[in-house]
Figure 1 (spheres, rainbow, N blue to C red):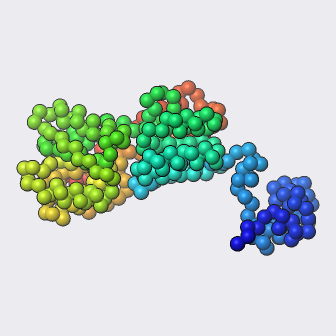
Figure 2 (figure 1 turned 180 degrees about the vertical axis):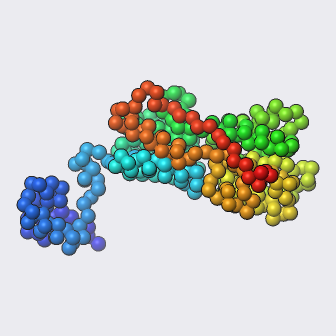
Figure 3 (figure 1 turned 180 degrees about the horizontal axis):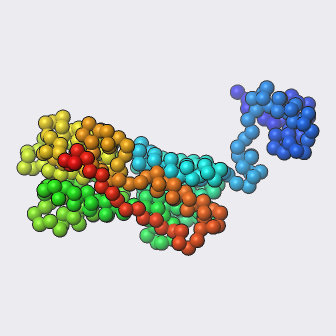
Length: 335
């Protein structure tokens, strides 16, 4: 089907192309009668102006780019919502790239941001991205990291103290008398997951006789959690952990169901702690104890920092924000 263009509108209205352009974009330059005629012709033909052309005329894209590790995780969906809160207040929209735990997809998203000339980028990195981020910055596109920090100290960031979060989760289980702990997480190479494990290890090291078993999955879905819960339930009571920390709530909720479906009681036999405190954690079959991250606030704060950098109003103190964890205790650990 042929796309209706500005030339078609001009022919239908019986005016020049420049008159159509003025009537649609600068109506103060033509008479009210011509504006009505041109807009009527555009409506009859179903003409929609090309966004790219409008952006070119305005000298800006009106877009912020944002990558997230996995939008299926409500934590990242909430983070995007927070960023949209700030962006919409500034008259901007967000182009979201979902990496789906895939470094190649993540890099493709950053290349797309460069091609469409976003005004700024919010990046929640899954893998190493230094060359791609440098290219964006070389194009004059400011970047703010979300749920991550820049080891080089060049990029502003909004992050979460995951070492403290992992430690808090483990200390809660240890204080409840659990001594055989397990940490179930996906992809040890993901910094946030690695730091959560490290925090749990620090807590366990301070309790002689306590142990911590890392268990790695390919992804952090409730389906995989269900499978791993069943596997743990198949162990002998002395060989299975009596406390489990999952690297996110999806995984934890699946674990709880996998254990219960095989006759293992939660929390009497195995206590389970999740991470993120997504909305569903509180209303799960066994309400889930979880380490809360303020995802929406983190996204909003990151976007506000980015907007300040775009506007050139960011002061030297507007750089790195680190949120601290809060443990929300529920039935899955006896709360």
